Length: 206
Image 1: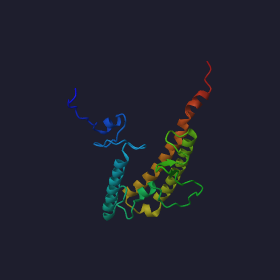
Image 2: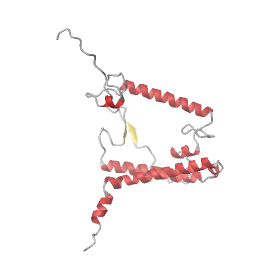
Image 3: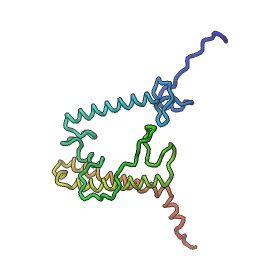
């Protein structure tokens, strides 16, 4: 009826509820704006969230630096990063590194501001060939990090550290090799290699 008061529009609350709204709206409570193309947040809320994360991370690094602790994990460290975290980020001293292994980043920032893998100019699933190349290149990178990390973990510099730090460095190096193994398994699973082998195997007669 004319003049009848309409109930106020209730904005959905909570991340899960706001994700289901059509048309989509920003996942930040209280915001009515549409989300960015590649985010659940609108451009303004996303930038504010990133700024808050950067400020928090900078404050944490400064606090750990004053306490002479690793900037990443908080373990005691003489440098900005402990031995284990240096291995994880690929900063372990490379003794006899094979320079033929490709270690250049496989991402590139495009004109629209988004970061994509090389050759991936639009949103959407990459081709199997592109995914295979990406997984194998990353596997080589982690194998090299694991090789350099294990050599670094066995070096006099690390062996002079307390047992807990020695073991942490070795585990970090082995974790890089484990990542490489998982990446090497991806093309096999993607192309159903084990299933094809099972189908091609001769069946017993009888």
